[in-house]
Length: 211
Image (cartoon, rainbow, N blue to C red):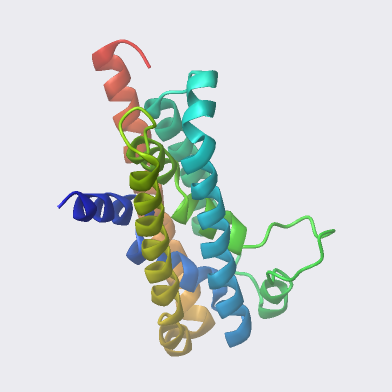
């Protein structure tokens, strides 16, 4: 039962299904090979980030005295700013999108969509980072329990990768124009989710009187 609880918790915070529309909007103009590479890189980067927080996250958060509400507030702001670019940004032409391939030269100023926003903060969200820290609390969980949690996390990310792969038929169906529409709709939804995260953090701060 405890294993199921961990799976459900990580499923909710990583949100494989919620990542699919963002992936479709970002990769609609990419080739099949580029979309697969982007999906794989996003999952690998997010796994690396979450494993980092699993190993040293508790030490860093305790040392810096960062609270859950601070993470939630900051994550909401980041997501909201990205949502605005999805809503008001110009649709990227095919050639421009392909220059953002995961194998792009390191001198390119633009981050790969596999890293931002797919890996962080979509898959490895602030909520996922803190969930990993809480599920692997050194004071409550043994090394074996933490290893099991790591395995559950990896399984959720593998499912996320598979979901992104099956989004390819959607890309072929809707085309570039449809992707632009999806991007703006998802931008509105993402902005609402981000605003809710920020408002929830503010309300809890007001109720408790502290971070």
